[in-house]
Length: 392
Image (cartoon, rainbow, N blue to C red; front, side, top):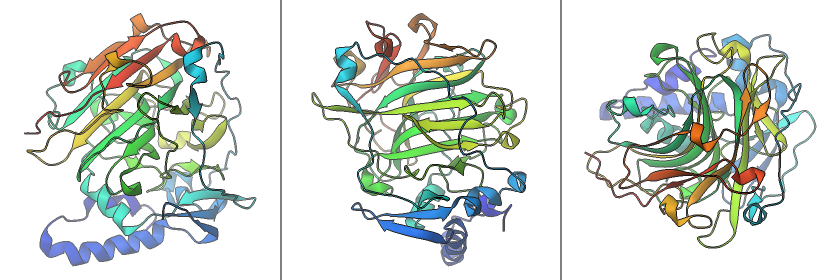
């Protein structure tokens, strides 16, 4: 079942007369995904967090990781410059874990997957977090998939940004995420990694949750969410993918953010996800090829998107639900934009003039850059909108 875990999830039949068989297959898959726990916690939000032996997590069911040696932390963490001399940044606080969770030494924290999780991801399997460039606006499904993002097109080894946390309301069969994404390759060779927060009715009771998404098989292939399939190696015993991202920001009030870093380790070639100062985990180099992310990325995206899987629906809220021109405390933002130069390995703030903005439905969602005093706001974006576009 090792190599077939992802295959089962992505190919189960959707027809009504296959529902019983599908449920049985999902239940078998669920038993395989949820590894035996050393210790478990029932959170106040209703979901369960398991402490799993780091050597026995689902990641190592991937055939490419059969003899993998675990890296507990990056060999070098990029020196992201931080600045405390801006009044806006002092009003925005980092994400913190609400529940008092402490896993034993030698274990990692994993959110227990439920049958409802699997059903939801199955229903939305056609959604991939692959941001198209403006010239790709005629791709199938683009009328259901709306973006408001800043794009950076240069060879790089990773990126960083502070992603403002919100709880946009969405209906069944809709998603509203905000993330940072790195990509390389074209069409069949495309590989991508994303990290941020996501809201979907069936996940976390329609509240914002921490997530990752990665794809290694090309533009038209479905990738993997968080720890739902083998590949991503969790190392944190503190933060679990899929857990609630909270507190959330308040309109014209207190602002909160996820301090997200995605970068390639100079020595191992692994791609790391770090939240604040906490390494969450990594995608081993063996998952990637040279036309993809094995040798770095050539595109970075910051911002938001929304998706509706059903026709004749009204598109949902993105970010705070307010347009960028409303500014701080009202519109959603990603600030502290940083990139790692592929050649020099230096950390830089991309000039806003070097960012390409893309909003494929500007009457419903938009994005704009901001550059002001202070390191965190020298390169930043506001994005989002109230939605209201008809899905046809």
